[in-house]
Image 1 (cartoon, rainbow, N blue to C red):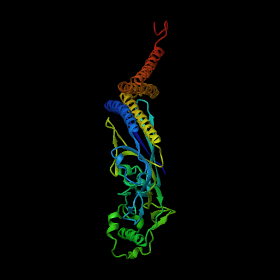
Image 2 (image 1 turned 90 degrees about the horizontal axis):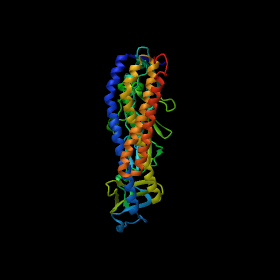
Image 3 (image 1 turned 120 degrees about the horizontal axis):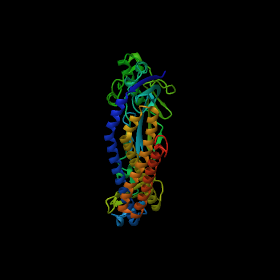
Image 4 (image 1 turned 90 degrees about the vertical axis):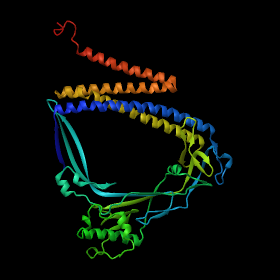
Length: 439
């Protein structure tokens, strides 16, 4: 059943909070301005570095043998990556020849969900009604049920876990690219992980069952009430080689299952209960890659352009030199637009915080406060966009004068629209000539 909590904030408290937010608003405007300025410079510098790099890139060709003639050059190459390393998970005994092995742990827990609704009251006060509900589902970390808002949920929906395990990842130390060795920064870009179907050995299954049973015995013989963190990775490793006899109170209990390729710790994989743990594995196999990097003996490093920007890329599959540089330029443009939007949003939020006291003052009459708030919001959007365009335009004037001039013109249009809106509102509130009010 949903639990509802109602909180009230007086008009004076809201007004005080809005004035305190002005300082944060100024900080956000400064941060957004700095971000926009830096972002434009970075976009141009990265583009120039890519242009410089593409002009000097050489095709490496056959990677089955070292090409000393191209040592120190920026090269483009395509070929398979491989490794002889065997990667292992120390807790589950999973072992595979791969580029990367990953373990993901999930916990079946009660989770608190909330939904809030704000209501304005006559006199400027505000009432917030928050509804809390609780659902059991798989999560990526244990949930502290003692922090639940509903007292009944804290008592009845108590969370615990059968085993306190963590995510795990290991990467091959030696990955070859033909006759060359891949450095770690390029290895990190190798993708293509696939789910791994595991089969636990009898020894590993017995060890896990023994640990769960020992924890259950300490908790009174009931594994469903094992305290959070009762079984952990370190203790599991310490018990290996010790007496494998099950506690008498729990003899024959089977809490370790392999279902759907994942390891399930609990009574039944089909009907998970609070505290159960699900562990899945992924492996990244060798494959074909395309790369752009500077050749350095039998390995690679990032190419440093004359402006200090570095260029290096690794993409899965076969990609031509032209396509790789095209993708790099597209990625640069996409990230630039994302940061432009982020900078403009920071400025708009900052302006809204600065103008927030106006809406709160008008909230003495809720309808009037809503009208003032909507008007202030529109002003913040127009002014924020105009300010953002001015910053971007000034930055571009330094690098691309024609584009910068066009952006300044667009910013001027937004400012004119803002001024026109102010005049129209003033005209709407002024008395008509000859009216009783004017007399």
